[in-house]
Length: 291
Ligand SMILES: [Zn+2]
Ligand SMILES: [Zn+2]
Image 1 (tube, rainbow, N blue to C red):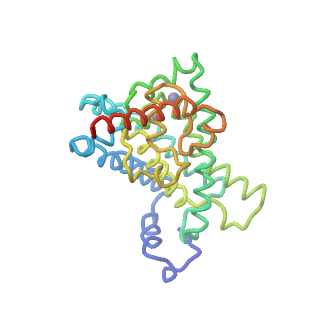
Image 2: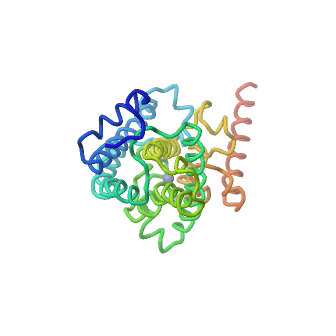
Image 3: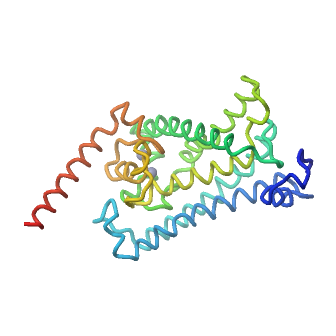
């Protein structure tokens, strides 16, 4: 593959990246690498939560303590998710490379500066969350809910790998928030604003964004809210504490990553009242115990 940088200017990661593509069909390399990365991150990120299930100490951090997910739940979900990954998501993952390179996405080293990657990933998070909020809210429209979105709501007490447990139509629609954002960003910077080409989309940025988006989705469905969870450090971050309520109540809290749209549109009123009641009950129980 033709590169702008000489091997001496490349870092270790960039060298490995180039070696991976050397003499191979780039469409196949990107497809296989992206698919394997998706599987590895999706199931790998779930393992720490699965381990927590077997350690009594961590049960105090479960959001819905009374509901226990069984091995059968995990197994059924794994089979369905794997089927969806191979049959629906896999082909779409393979289509990404040809489609994105037609638009001019860069694949070869050097990689963009970390500041550029960070800026772009922040934009992708904001776009995805906005898109997700509105589409997810629409999916709760009864005729659509019954036919499509109901599948994702099978688990009222979700667990990590339930994140992508959904009807294929839902996967396609919400997937646009994840994949469409970077493509729209690239088209806008390249064809509308005509920015410096270095601000265009690079495949490595896309992959980093997918990894972070997977972390977000699996964390949000984990069923655990730890004192060290991100939402306790970044107050506008949604996390499991926010999305778990959506599965529990089947209404409200429609956003994926951030809390602002639900707050602005008032779709978190019941959630906030519920958490307030919960905190009050916990406080009373503590007082009773100390007497
Ligand atoms: Zn929903
Ligand atoms: Zn969910």
